[in-house]
Structure formats: C-alpha cells, structure tokens
Image (cartoon, rainbow, N blue to C red; front, top):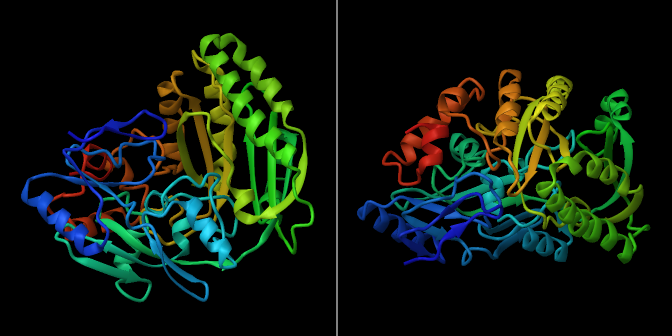
Length: 430
C-alpha cells in the first residue's frame, strides 16, 4: 500500500495504487505503458502547491525527484529536469550569473507544476513563467518522447507550455534566462484612493507592481520592484526576520487562529494588520525580492481578467466580502501581467489584471469563492489553473479562444485519457 498524497493546503488527498520514480524519459515511458496495460491512470505530482486536485490519482503517481538536475547551460538558455524545485533553480541560476526574468511570490513549486498551471508574477511587460520556455520535452501516453519549440512543432509548443498535466509528463525544460539582476523593493502602506488615482502610472512606470488590500478597511500595502545597478541598500537581517518571518508568518498565523475561533475579532485584526507593516525600501538579488516564505496555510482562488475590468471586479468583491455570513482573514492580492500566445494561459491574447482571494485553512470559504467566481465569469475572468475553481469545460470554451485546439491536441496525444482524473474530466471534458 502506498503512502497517501496531500497537497500543501491539505484540502486535496489521494492514495495511488503504486508510485514510480523514473530517472530517464525511457524509464518513464515503461511506467506509462505498464500503467496503460493494467488499466491505471497516471498523474505526475510536484510539490503539491496547487489548490486543485489536478495531480490526484488512485492509479500511478509519478514523482519526478530523479529528474530534477541541471542538464545544460548555453549562454542564457538553461535546460533542467522538470522535477527541479524553483528554489533550486534560482540558486543554480545565481551560481552561473543568471536569473529568471520574473517570478511569483513563492519558490516551493517544481518547475513542471509551476509551468503547467500558468504560474505568474507581476509586471506589465511580463507574461506568465511559461512565456520564458524556449523548448520542452514531453513523454506522451504511449511512451513517445516529444520535443517542441516555437520552430519545432509550434502547435504542440503552444499547447504544452500550460497543459495542467493533460497531454503527458514534462521531463525537461529549456528556459530563456537573463543575466542576474538586482531589484530595489519599495513597500509601503497606502489607501485604496492612492491606488486607484494613480493605477495606470503604478503599473506602467514600475517594472513590477502589486498591492494587497486588507478586507474591512480602505488600506493597502503597495509593492514596487524595479531593476537597479547594484545591491547598495540591503535589508538588515533583523528587519527581514521581523517583517517576513515574525509579523507575516508567526503573528499573522496567530491572528488567523484567533479569527477562526472568534470571527467577530476579524475586522479589528484586519485594521491592525493593515498598519502593522511599515514602509521599507531595500535592494537584493531578484529572486530574494520576488519570493517570500509562506508558512500560514490557506486555500486560494485567483482570477485573471482584462485590465479594464479590474475596478468593477474589485468593487464587486468588496461588496461580496461585506455581505458574507463569515469573515475573511486574508488580504486580497492584485497583480498585472502582459498578454501571451499560450493556448490555456490566463493571459492568452490580452493584458491581465489578477485578483487572488484566500481564506485560512479550516475557516469557511466556499460561498466567498463561488460568489467571486460568479462575479468574474461574465467579466471575461479565467481562473488560475493551480487555484480553486468550480467551472466546467462548457464554460471554459468561450473563455479561451484556442480551447478547442487544446482539446484536439489532447485527443491526439492521449486518446485513451491515461492522464485524466476527475478534475480534468470536469474542466476539459471526458
């Protein structure tokens, strides 16, 4: 009997019939053919940082821990095994004087998981992380090893860069990196009026801009990250510990536990939290600025939308929060990305704004998430594939112009649905 699998948030669990740790694409192909012969479905898992059951299976669970090494570096093109965690990738790149052009706010995911779900950071000139893929290697249901790029099998390339595990198993990825760079981080409290009055400038004039809104207040924390020549203003160790460890994790975790037990305290705690983090400006290597520790467990839904829909979506969200029969303990995160051409990317064909909503583990969330999704769907909203959603293939077809093309690619590569599970049956159809 295999050990059970659980995602990071603990909201999804599964127990596979067997677990495989292939070391090469050829070994993986043997595992896939054996699974098909035994009538078992297959899912590859990463670090479990998706809030959906996209990796859950009762069949064969593929662990990519033996396919997680640096393969080659040629100038700024870096090829790595798809099982490598982002944290290891960042350290590896730094050791060679390189960096990812942009990152999300955590580095615990594996490369395969982050890319397959459309993980993104923020920045008006940057698409999701999958836009940095130069080429990739994929093992399909019959054990065939396929390689693709913009020049070689471009349709497969545009389908596979964000594929939610439905086309095969990623085994290697070539990433287009940049010389290592330093960011100046400027983080400071503000009001919603400050954000809305200068939003276009905030987004256009900073390399990376985002803000966090504290429910039941008009307060936000604005974050501006910009490329600078040198790290001439490092953050003191005690200050990083105070803000990122003690306040953002230890104290905040305690506040969430208090709010879960005594919901009436949540608005007061939110007002205090909004003023607890003071302004700070510092410089550091890019990956140290982009990525911060997240130890307080939560569940999350995130929607991308056309940027022009953001204000309507945000105002609607405030109304939802005020009208819920329970309290919301987590800040709301708002980020921005550029358009791309990846078929299942949330940013396909348009510049996006993203709104991410969270709730502390063990606290009620479903009505919050469902009402937010109902608000965003008619606004052209597309849910992050690694975050919770309640939609089905019928509703996704009009939201993604190339949805039908992706399904056709799936039919070609996996006609027997070796890589399907209940989640993909819902969001892609059977």
